[in-house]
Image (cartoon, rainbow, N blue to C red; front, top):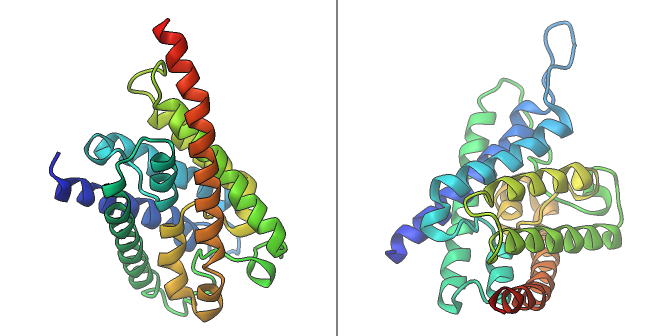
Length: 241
């Protein structure tokens, strides 16, 4: 497959993940009618939206690029010997550009509402910027653990012996579950590109905390990649016997 097409797939996949997921939080999570009744989708709706973005793009362009849409996924797959070294940096660049472009479009749309204020703009944070005011340590552990299991699921669902053609479903559901657990803690990252785009529009405070949402997901992904090599190399040997 031509490399420019693969990078284009990563750009569009990450754009859709950021726009759809963060857009659900910014535009639809809290919506009230004139009587003050909340008609928004809430945490559950936002979690489902993130899962659906991955599910839909996995089937739309996953066959083109592998459907990473996330620097942590690229690094984890590389650690698990599922991604060529030469693809790591180009994929990450395409993903970050896609996320920033999506955040810019989302900001443009959201700012069209009279009196709209950006607030946290679906950015991630710890301490005072955490939705539940969770500490740095709590947020760090949450992001490492959630990303670890996300990669463990991705690699497991795409390994030899897994059901062919169905990987997008458990991967999308896994991301939904991750958001259901961790939105109150960090606003859920597990994806450095998704964190970078909104942070650039949320302001300096969120940008200053962006380091955690690169370090923690990548650490979790690296550990998952190494563990998955051990798990699935053993599976492949067993299947060969």
